[in-house]
Length: 289
View 1: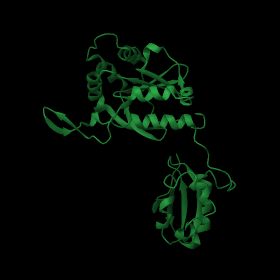
View 2: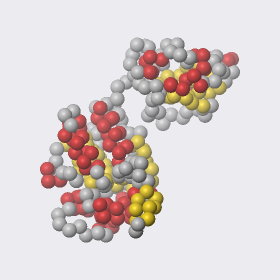
View 3: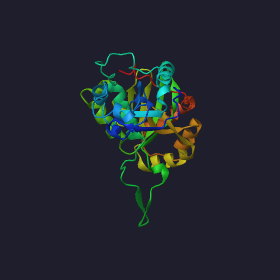
View 4: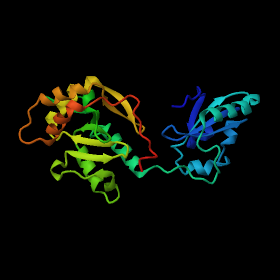
């Protein structure tokens, strides 16, 4: 992880007219905090006024709200020195490239994984923050405000990351797995396991989305493990992560599900080998293509 300096402020590319009319070093980043370019200006506002910057069109193609201009203010006499030092230290992606080069494309597989993880971290109805109980309208509990969490990881030939889901994630995953271009991102499995299981191939790891199709059971499991969930970031998406994977088995066993429940059987079988997701886990998006 790069050690960025303490910035004086930041604006999106769309907000560039709000930059101060002062000397400074600017840092251009994308929405995933990837450092693209470092430059200097005697007046940051004038440097980025309109579309006069020599890389404006290149960055604008990425999206005016997806490019962030961060800056530090300094004296004019320090500009050359600081610019050289920051470029050498932080190695921005595009400083040595030709202007005509496009920004790196994002892998469709990586983008779809991001979309699924974002949906996992959101409630079924984002706008509905309340529920009804005994005729009263009350705020939803914290454990009722997201669709899924990372339960842990187990190793076979590669890591398998288990994402326990509820509500309609199975329907979302089902549509994705049948999409004419996205279906290649999934590993075929026993049809009897669908819609409870979807194996998303992220190349260096497999994401196993397991939906608890029984609403009462799902609510109980989420409520039980919630105190041991913390925020983690995967592929630039913040979602819940179970820090103690040993808590999953007792939560699953507390409710007896009538009939054959593939999700319960699958999760209980792998609990013995489930380990917490490593704190330093990261995905190489250049491999996920």
